[in-house]
Length: 238
Image 1 (cartoon, rainbow, N blue to C red):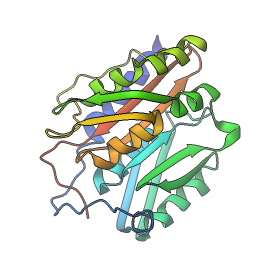
Image 2 (image 1 turned 180 degrees about the vertical axis):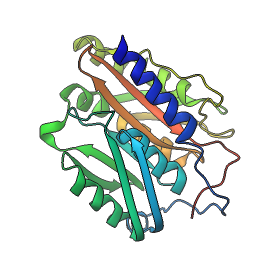
Image 3 (image 1 turned 30 degrees about the vertical axis):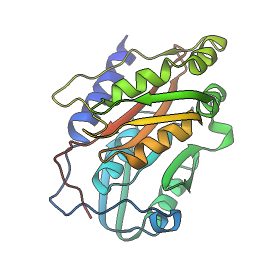
C-alpha cells in the first residue's frame, strides 16, 4: 500500500510540476526526418527529476521532442536523474543519457525518439504488448490521454495478451488541476498497426501529447501505459 501511495505521489508531481516548466517562445515544428530530429540543436539544457519518467517528460514537453519510453525492469522510480547540456544536438544529449544509465539504449525511427532497455533489462510481457498488432483502433477529436490509454488497453488483442500472462493494468490515475489531453482537433483511426507504432504515431502527430511510456510493476504484476501532454495554450523552449 505504501509503495502504491508513493507511486501516485510521484505521478502527481510529474503532472503538476513536470508539465509547467515552459518559457514563452515561438513553437518550432517537429522534425519530419529522423536525421533532422537527431541533429536538433539544444542549448542550456538543465533538467532534474525523480525517476526516468519525470526527467524525460520534462525534456519531451519542454523541447517538443516526441519520446517513447519503455522503462527498464531494474529502474528505481525514486532515483534522481539529471541531464545537462550547454550546447549541442539531441544526439549528444541522448548519448550522455545512456552513458549515465547503461541499461538503456535509444533509436530514432519515423520521427520519434524511442528509449528502451537493453535486452537483459527488458520485460518479456511488455515486449509482447508493444508488438501485438491491433486490427482496428480509433479515438475521436477532443479526447483525453486517459481515454486513449484505456481504449488501447481494452482492445481484444491487448486483452488476450494480458489474460495469457495474468497481467492487469495499474489502477493509478491522477485527477489534478490539469487532465492531459491529445489536442482539441486531434483524432486517430488506424488498422493493422502494432501498439508501439500507434503510440509513436500519436506523439508524433499530436500537437501537445509528446511522450508515452510503458512500465511493469513486478511486485503485483500490474503495468501502465501512459501518455503525458502539456497544456495546449503553453509555448515551449526552442
